[in-house]
Length: 295
Image (tube, rainbow, N blue to C red):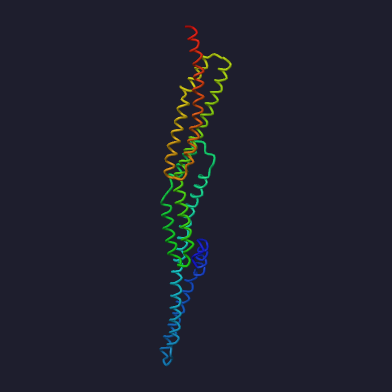
């Protein structure tokens, strides 16, 4: 049988070669017997009146059997060699795709993705997928099936169908995965900015409540909120998330999770923005009051 896999077929091939390694030895023995037999026939023919037909027939049958066995041994060795090659190629293609799918599933299931570098590594992985792998798998499977009897081909067909199905599933999910990654990265960035902004608001509010130098507080406020561009960065994150959410729902119309997340974030930012405006109003009321007082 050729269906046991590369190692099993290789073992058969090794045994086959070992057994038929003495073919030349037996061929030389047969040639020697043929020479002896010819000499005997020649001597008998000279003597006359002896029927050599049966002996000649047996000798011919022996030669025919030897030729038949050796020729078929060569054919069988070729089949075994071809089967080993086909099994190797098929298993190699199978391994490459299985390894890629396993890595893809690991990446998709990753929970802690908080840097742009990680997102980029995911992008590179999924964008560099080699479509030829599946083509090679199908081709090597066909080559292998050509080596096998029809009743031994089903496991090969099942393996190819399983890998093709998984391949399509992962590739169809990959764009969604990458969109979610970019969304989560923007979301993480947003929360970090908001955390820093709220920390700054609290610091300035406390300084204001303690009636510290108002000009220093106003200068700090302008530096943080205007020059550093924290507010613009937050708004950029929100716009990016909205765009991703819009694209995502085009791919996955039934999944509104990103839109829900965007709404939550916009509400959160609206609350923080009101705090920023309120603080600025407080800070600028004091100079205005002083100006009015000095009129």
